[in-house]
Length: 109
Image 1 (cartoon, rainbow, N blue to C red):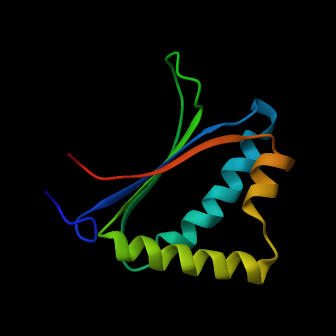
Image 2 (cartoon, helix red, strand yellow):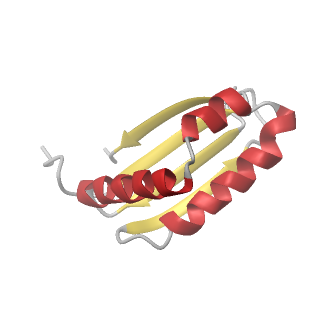
């Protein structure tokens, strides 16, 4: 069995975003990506929009991290940055834009 503190970690965030909110949603995620991609341990950061299929999620973000420590460090950096900007992600994405999210960390099996 793998130790949870080592090995690649995937953050996969799936969103249901109302059509009229997609442009503002994508714009903010691109700004977040700009910072995340510069952080130590970030291997890949993709933002995907649904082009077909019956799934309910129309926006997916997938970030590949080198390990659990990189994820923890990135979360701390982003929380600090949001506090400095006075940005509340939940308020903006959920309350302002009406998006719903399914967020999770995953490991390859």
